[in-house]
Length: 108
Ligand SMILES: [Zn+2]
Image (cartoon, rainbow, N blue to C red; front, side):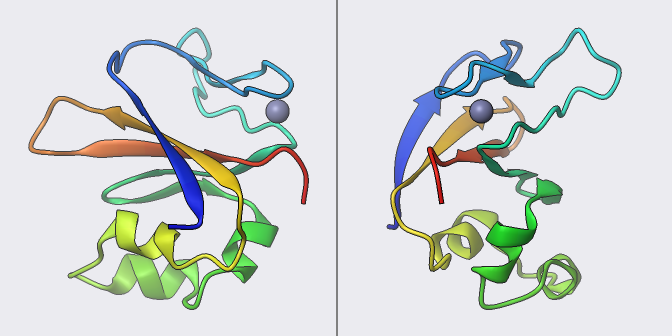
């Protein structure tokens, strides 16, 4: 795995960037995904909610190809990134083994 996995238990809590402390997931905002400059992606098992150009370029497949794949495994897809030394927060959504993933990196 090219990243450090950090499990978060509270799926109602905001998710803050460890570097600039922006709330990347901010439940007080109507648009609750608020990427900062360190955010590589925000994804659920169903697909990406946000992806940076840098992170998409680091994957073997495009986002469209990933989303079109009925067998898509989000955790496996993000594990194929050629970027190393990033962090992924994994939040249990509490339904059917569904997770949200938030990827961050200090600098590229
Ligand atoms: Zn940040």
